[in-house]
Structures are given as structure tokens and as C-alpha cells.
Image (cartoon, rainbow, N blue to C red; front, side):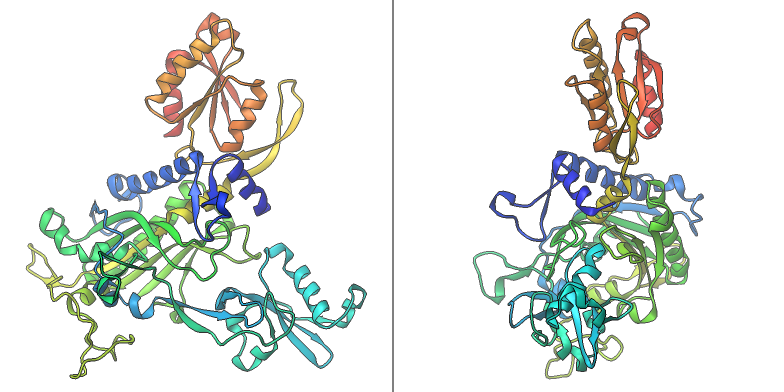
Length: 537
């Protein structure tokens, strides 16, 4: 599938639009259209039901170490600045960027890809920013131009076997780097840190006294409310706290449609457990979350679970695994992160309680006071847990399954996109685009058509539409030939179409058509709601 086709469909059918498009757009921000908002909401609702409301249904099936409870939170986007100092975001939440002294453009250091090209004793690292399928062609074009050659002279060039990211090029060799928008080498600055948090101001004060940050993740709101949840509910460890909400990261170079945006939505769980049981719970959540994507339609070689190598782990992590998907905009063989499942140990609760008391043990960039102690201390609140059955007191360990709602939406769209052939009204095969979305997350569950706009068919169709509307989001359409109406629904992922025809007037039945198999069958009008409900469930 070419990514351009999916992006075009998303705009044409109202899944997603560029933010502020009539003013030229704002890079890294996307609006969800009428269909997109339904799809994303269905994904979030499925996550909330399966993880929070209906979690007991699958406990034994997934091999949980024991029963557990789940509750929810909805925390504010702006929080006390000290939250981000104690969490490590204030000091550590950054990417490296480089600037081009010629083009004046800025790039994220690890997102610029390129390939070494040699001509005799000369060499250059040609970097590009383009779609994967055009990478070699673009490198060749730029290399020829750099060496002053024509297309017929391409045989004089020797290309490295693989592409690599700019951050893998040794510092001594960066003088040979040809920046993506430059015509000469050695125009990039040295990489430097760029904090990814959006800064703003609270109240009338515009100085540092009123400075605050838009949250870069939803997790910290759960940690700082840990004691509130314990005191206001009857939950006992093990238990999880779920939250769905917006987060903001000031990405240097947002790209790849909605995959890397500056405003995005997360679906996160912080699962609190006894330290002795945390390895078992980590394994449980790795398997449980991978199964969720599989059940909703992501399967096969495009989906994988990858355990992080030791040098990839965050400073607090006891183990992290990523659920990854082979998005079509990535080079062949590469995967993009959908969700991370992290064993965070007791880092977060201890940090918000004590602060970073041992810089040697926790190597963070900390400002020290005159006594050699960190300035950024915790809340001073006791965030330990006492087991009322054993009287044991401990700082709980945390397992964090953190999913991106926008990335999940994009992955389901990519997986669903298919092109095939289907018969038209005359039985002739015609090409069609079909979005094979799982019925649980499809924007519309069914569409209702009268075959023609006469003989009482519209009245029957509207009655069926009204009955279905009480249960699902459904669509009514009486315009154009029925074959075209089918194709419109196929293209937006509607799993079932219901057609009222002349036979309906005689025996009170309608035709139901399956989007994927194209199978058609008759159902009594009184049984339509139950038929669709049963198939969706």
C-alpha cells in the first residue's frame, strides 16, 4: 500500500485533516473528522472496556498471577512544575537536534537518514528526508549533483550497502555529511539538547514564578494521586489506575502523518503491585496488551513484541518491551512503536515522595544546594502502601502499559486498507477500496438502504435505521445506485449493509451484505437489530 493513498482517503472520507488547513496548516497537529473521531473514540472505548471495566472477563484466559482491581482517573493537563522536576522530565526529557548553517533548517539528530557514497578517494554521507521507497533514487540524484556528474556517470559511484541514521556517524566523519537541504558538505552544527516540553504561564505572572508545562505524558497525574486513590476507594494491591488523555511534546521534526505529532492522546495504565510479584505482572501485561491488538485486527508479521536491550532502557526501568507495527511509511524491515510496557520499579512513587536523594545511584542532572543535597526534593508525603492483611509496608512497584491512541488509530487504518474487486449491479467485477476494520472499532456498524425511493421502501428502511440507531452508530443512504452505495460504505469500513427491496414488501425480510466476504443473506426485519448486534459482538 502506498501511504499517499491512505492519506488521501483519510481526507476525502473525513477521517483526518491537517490542523488549520485553510491557513496553510500547523506542522505536527491533526484534526479528526466525522469518521476519524468515531474510529478513535471506538478504539479508546474498546481499550477502556477491556482494560478497566471488563478486565475480570479475561483474567483466567490471560494467566494473571491473581485477581486485581482497576479504577480510572482524569487528571489536568497543567500540573505543578515540581512534578516534572521530580519525574526527571525537567532535566532529561530532550532530543538532540542539529541545524544547517546554509539552509537554516533544523532536524532531529536521529531522524536524518543517509548512505555513504564514494567516488575514488572522495566520500560523502548523503542524507535525505523522503519516503522509504524513494530513498535510493534520491541518494543517487543528490550524489550525482554533489560530485558534478550526469546520470550516465552513475557507474563511477560506489554506494554503501545500508542506510543509517545520522547519529550513528562518528563525530570525526561528520565533516563529510551532506545535509538534506544543502549543496555542500559540513554545514551541520554539532548536536545539542532540546527539551520537548511545551512551556506556558499560569495566571498574570509571565516570569519564572508563573512558568508551567503542558504535560508530556499522562502517567505523572496517576502517581501524584496514588494516595488519593487509596484513601478514597477500597482498592487493594494489586490494582491498576487507567487514564486516557492528551499529552504534548514539542517534536523537532514531526512527520509520518499522525505517527509523530506534537499533540497526541495516550491510553495509560499504572499497575501497582508487590515488588516480589512484579516480574510476573510484567510478563502478564506484555502478553495481555499484545493480545488486545491481535484481537482487534493487527496480526501477522507486521506486529511484534520486542524486549529492549540493556542499553536502551530508561534510567529507572527494570525492563521494557515495545509492541511495534511495520507501518508502510517506514523502510522495509523497520517497525514503529505502538505501545511500551515498562517495569518502572518504585522509581516514580519514591521520587515524588523523597525526591532524588542519591545522584550516584540515580544519575540525573540535579542542582545541589550548599549542603550537597538536590534542590529538587519530593513532596515529603508518605507514598508507601501498607497491606492490611499482612501488615507489610512497602513502596509498590509499577508496571506501565502506555499506548498511543493516535498511533493505534493509524495502525488500524493501515492494516485495514485493501484494494480488491467486487461485482457491480450487473455482476461485472469492479475494483474497490475496502477498509477492513474490526466491527468493534468501525465508525459505522451498519448502513441501511432502500433499493429505490418509492413503493414504501424508504419508510421501511428508515424504521430499521431508527431501531438500529438506538444501539449503534449507523448510516442511512438512498442516493445513487445501490452498488455505488456499497462501495462508499466499503471505503469507510462499514461491516454490514442492509438493503430494503421489493421482496421486503412481500415477506418482511431484508438483505444483509458482509463487507469482507461479500456474502448476502436474508433476515426478518424484526430480527435485524439482533443479527447485527450478535455479529458485532
